[in-house]
Length: 290
Image (cartoon, helix red, strand yellow):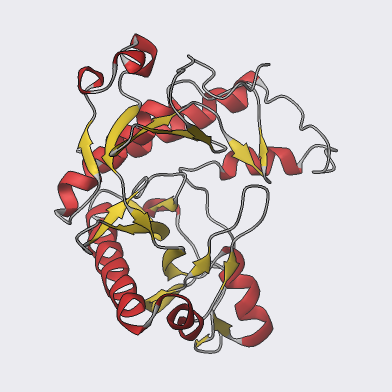
């Protein structure tokens, strides 16, 4: 299967930075972000793509930008507002015209539950990003209070590295670090309450922030999607193991059942895995955006 950058289309004439899932085009004073249907796991782009994944992620980000009522970078999702090269049916619903910012070089993670790299650190030291936590917590336990656990932004092919708040201060200064922490936790708390009322637990999320030329800090990138967050069905949640989720964990779990060595081209995803993953993304959108 092809893993060409857009899979659905090609745009020429604009500088482009290609990520695993999204392609960012420089339009001068603004950017165009195209969410493709690509899916990645263990730092590899998999094939085939997940049908309509890019449109689902874009729709969910647009919902949250509106619902959260915080300053953000979204200008328009109408391809008619973009240059002619982007006015293609394949790009409708998956392309955002956004403000250009100076990206703050910190991955802003808010955690309400103990999982992933946080669980690994807790088992070793009873801390997460240097924050002491109570004894006796289990995998997927709810934390006493949501915590801010920043990470450095890794280059493509590398892993983000969890850092302490003190290290964040060294990197971006006390005022910016404090604003990042407070605003990230505010978004998490409000979004988690909204999700829980709809039968979904928001276990954690990763946000990105950028500064406008005026100095204002605004929310950028994708927001509270299954690619940047862990969403769990509330009805089946039970601490002690990793719960089923609405994100690509289903794909990761399938890959773990294969003989793939994670250092060579990955096996193609079976049709049933593609269909199940697409259904999970669609269900998340339907439940969260109503």
